[in-house]
Length: 385
Image 1 (tube, rainbow, N blue to C red):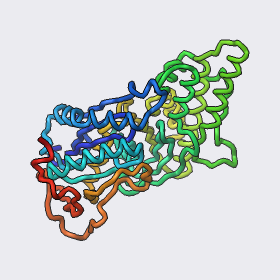
Image 2: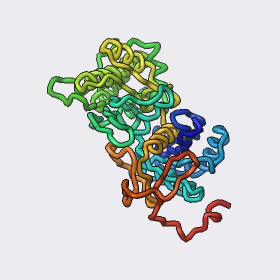
Image 3: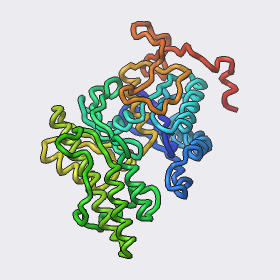
């Protein structure tokens, strides 16, 4: 294991400051500082609050991750950071921190894609990803079907949400039911005591003429909200557990049905499910049932690795190092709409045929030099006091 790349990953795309340390496909540390409680009173994530929380949590969380991993920052072979997609201000905090640490330590910098990281994290639990792998990513901001032929260079979008993502729908229905924020865990909990067949809520985009792999949860969200409002207007008690179970069943039914269909039609025999909603117990159970019936191998990381975390960023960064992918320039910027077709952001002047001028960490992994130094005036000794 000593000759595998040791990488620190920083994740700040939304409301959690995640820092992970990975050696190859082995997780050494996964430190998270969440600001979810600060957003709860607003019923959703407030970008400015998230950015400020990242600023306050960044250095302590990095120090905690390094201590947990039992390594020094100087031991690292590279630093990876989520460059997008996500909240622009939140991303900027993470990217700025990663660039500062990478420059001060003289380490390679890798700006990576948030969605590709969610796929790659499964390697930390179940070993190297088969190529190709179909990935179903479900979170507050994304519901996507992605075909990963090479997690570092070839990720193809098959389908996505055309309106509300699944996690967003969970949050909104929880708000209507007065269950608080975030909605995913609490609806999952209430649904366990409810009847998933009690109410026939609609399944969006499942007609014969609808896009085969795209998702739509806006109509479902509206239907559930109107059903609840009608009950309240009639002076009747809302059966919260049955509503939660029926709503949840409508969401996971569509997600798993389309994912299995994509695997069959694309000739892929592995399905990976990631993102925050992948922690949902009913989604896991129904996916396992349908994959087994279809002869598809299901891979789902443990719940702690499904939500946003630094481990997933470090995992993808380690894979970039291992496969000799190009490093990022010092002018790497946060891109709130970075497409999943860009698993990472390579330096603009990288020439794969050029000899590599130096190596880091003593593990035999060579990296190109960074020619776009926007902080060259600063002495490294002055970056940290």
